[in-house]
Length: 246
Ligand SMILES: [Zn+2]
Image 1 (cartoon, rainbow, N blue to C red):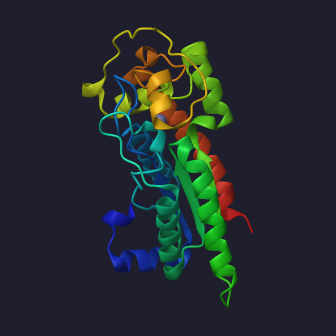
Image 2: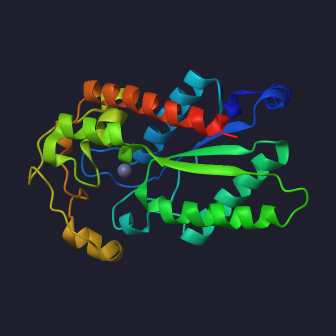
Image 3: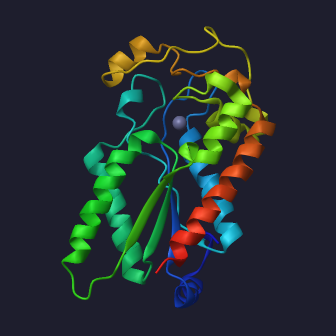
């Protein structure tokens, strides 16, 4: 059930029996020489839609541009500054609350969004708490790649070459969605270096092809399908408890 594909009377009917919605958020940023720029948004959206279908829960439009400042030395990357992203998330939450949505599960595809998401939740709760009557908004964010079963499955499929950016799990998931775009050619070095970084220039200098600690050539549409199914199951179980909790 996608908000974008519903009419307003259908949403009104839905709200008469449910206050739950899933909000996918990703990023538009380089994912190494073989990964798609939309990887984080495509993953979050596919997972959110699959979870929404399995639970009969509404899914909001994907916020496809996130906080990706550190990727801006690579062509095609787009970023919102944290203050902009905070305002976007806050305004989206307030819009949903106005209609009666009260439980918002955010499926996040990009680690760089995490701090700003928490700040946006805090700002929104602060604003709503000052109103009377209080709407009782509940928010939760799930970083799909960090879920315990997904972490374990990723290690089983890709060993120690998962890394932290342009990872085989996220790349595989996009190749499951778009098998015609799969590009599993070997990269040099096979496993990219791992390290910290300080801003966009330093990122490019330390990780010239954009990967961090990963070997996305291990990804395949088949492993991506397994990950999508497993992630959907794990998030659906968590979401069900979140949506039903008193
Ligand atoms: Zn990513």
